Length: 548
Image 1 (tube, rainbow, N blue to C red):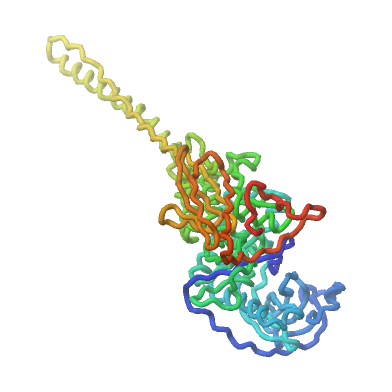
Image 2: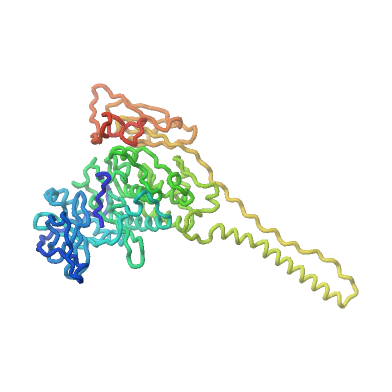
């Protein structure tokens, strides 16, 4: 059981959208805390008393019964916001988990609100793949708590320990369940915003192994038409390794930010490593915004074990621009089902038409998704076997026809002196030739990234706005595109972009005397011993750092 804390780096994002009405906060009940002995109920039959750890001896809740029902037994995990305890429901004897807000944070009204938001968000979804929240209340010392189901399983982090990749069949099963849970959350108007392996558990449920449970909605956003205290513009929350580019930039985030994080998780399951890593927080964020991920099949020892369809699904989820990703988890589920059944996911031709190095084997469109290890009904191989039997059936029919004719002639000749005329043998009809499958047209395109200073300058192609930095243009070989860059207080600049350079850095000239309010700078972590003003880890020196 985990409370979703991440040991690699802190962080999270704000999001604004419109959807269902906000969940009204429920009044908190003040509960009692009664002291009792620290006895592990698993050992009661043998009268063995569990010895608490030093940390548990100092804990104010271990050994106490809360609200007359929840006996606190031990600590399961700790995170930035709270501590998760294993408890026993004293009335029905059921194991539950209790998450208590840290005492030093309980006095902060906004933190308390965010903590309770986790309970409200998860309980509002009502999906089997979402952690079940059953109760919450207020402790006498002012701390809040909520009670959730006890998960006897492992976090997703466990199965990728040591850089191990996950077999494709298992990966697709986990991916589909995770997509179902997120689809339910998004339908309820809730964006998780901190999706990562630590927040996903695999349990045994009945006879089903690897049943997915999503937890830790602590920084989830309930989408409303109005923006509240927990959605302040420019606030950055989340875990950097799994953070969407727009989330890294402190921009508003909707459900497509979860789809990007979902893609990072699938990438890690398939390859054994995250797509972007660096030795500091800012280095990771910069790569999310600018760097293309290395193709999965280039990282694994046996590329043929990773279906191109799976790689296309992952890469589409990892598109830098939200509008280029899947627009809903339902679309992801549809492509996963195609992959599992042996069909070609819709992401394959789409990713082939984009630049970025995605390609498929030469015979992929002839054999379909034959790389998927799951059974594939009516596979091209089986169809080929059916075709190969046609000449045999046709030949047998021809022989039988010829024998019948000869027998008939001899039967007629027994009553007549006329000599039988020789008969010509009936040739078997030639087998039909399979029509060649046309190769898909190959479109060669290249990406050109425009990094602009100031970062909030807008890029236009004619009257169409292409947005602010970074702007990614997709151009065919030899194609040129004229763009204009504008920002109040700066001289506009027009330039013609072609495919000769993959990255262009543009700096606008400020108009003397014009008023200019620069965007808020983000704090940059300095590498020990590094030079001030140097590039962040993993960043490309040819790209303008958007935080400067």
